[in-house]
Each structure stands twice: as structure tokens, then as C-alpha cells.
Length: 213
Image (cartoon, rainbow, N blue to C red; front, side, top):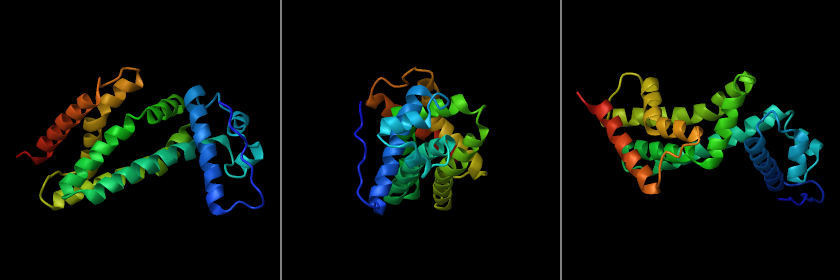
């Protein structure tokens, strides 16, 4: 699909500048998913975005910086979803459940799966990119999840010894299996109802594991 070049008169204001950056990031994400990181160039991104190379380079010093921003913005969306779930929970345990469900739905979104595949494919060749993604994208969500776990523990609703291990186990239990299947092209669920049933079972298993004697 051809994208009309973005035309601006004079110095763009902050909103227009952010819209331009978002357009570049969205365009880059589509190309990275379709072609992979190594096969995608700044020239291709500029052409697809209807922008000039220098417009991109003024905002991102190199392709790796643009790719990291693509991933970071996805991580920000996950953290925002988790914060919303955390804020609306009737109790700490309800908030934790909402975060867990938002995590499952987010990780199984087709765009997120596509970027996850790209990240895995390039991990050995570009370890610095992976390190930046883990620090800037994954860590904020993990910090929020650990805070929610501690809140539920302080309320006497669950118990555990190591919050970091519990967070990792919860993540693996809720999303690990479905994510692994979908990454190799096997849809984990046949319907939304099947996904709902899986989550309910995973949640019950998690609660049994952290609340038993």
C-alpha cells in the first residue's frame, strides 16, 4: 500500500512531531515483521513511510535505535494495560488477576508475535539490542507485576518466598505455553472461549500453588 508523504509547513508542533515519529515507528514495525531486522533498511522504511532518510536519522541515530523504539513502544502498551488493570481491581488479588489476563492477551496479539519472532531471530547477532529491550521494555512490566504480587501478599491473599521467582513462574504458567505454540505456527486456541477457559485454569493452578499449606 502506498503511503502519501507527510507534508508540513514550518516548524511542526509537539503533537505533529510525535505523530510523525509514531508513523515512522509503525511503518518500521510492519517491515521488520515482514522482512526481518537484517533485511530491512532505513531506505526501505523511509520509502514506505513517505519520508526522507534524514527525517528518520534526525530522530533515530541508527536502525538499531529505531528497532529498539519499536519494541519499547509495545512494552509501554503492555505496561499501560497492566497499570489500568492494577488501578481497577476491587482487591489486590483482583488487580493481579487483571494484570495476568492482560499479559496473556497482549502476548498473543499477532503484531506482538511477529516482533517476538524477529527479536528471537536476531538475538545471537545483536545481543546489545536484546539487552536494551529487556532493560527498557520488559523490566517496567515485570516491576509492576512484582508490586502487584507484593500487594496481594501484604493483604494476606497469597504467599510466597521469592517475588522474582514467583513472577517468572506466574508469567510462564499464564502465557508461556500458548506463546511457545504460536511462535512455531500452532494456534493455541480455537476460539476466544477456549482462551478464556485456559486462563481460568492457569489462574486456579497459580493460586493453588501460592496459597496452599
